[in-house]
Length: 107
Image 1 (tube, rainbow, N blue to C red):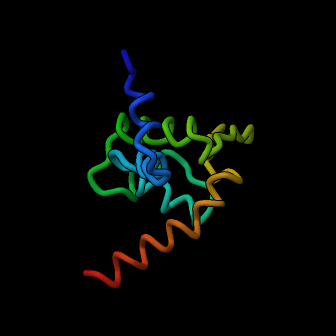
Image 2 (image 1 turned 180 degrees about the vertical axis):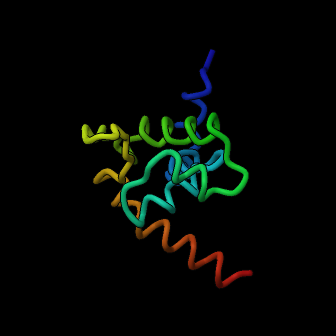
Image 3 (image 1 turned 135 degrees about the vertical axis):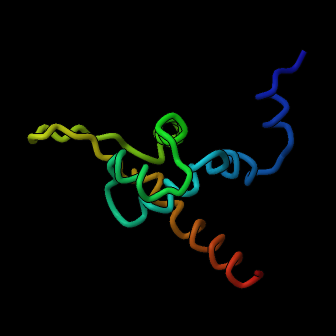
């Protein structure tokens, strides 16, 4: 019996994994906002229309799990957490920009 993971890797499409990393509720928006610099949770809630705490939290956790974002605790008062792009995330910026360009040219 094959698992879902085995089936996905057998498809042979290298872009499929990337698309899965960036698909999901609010992940593209979070990634896009991270291009401009470090993010704070409440800032994301204000900037993403229709966002709620649970959905943003899941998007941040998944992007962190994929190694695209890093979570940094800032020990200054008030204590806060910032999310920023990792080196792996930075390497996706040209790809993300190309996707934006394609969308803008084909509307």
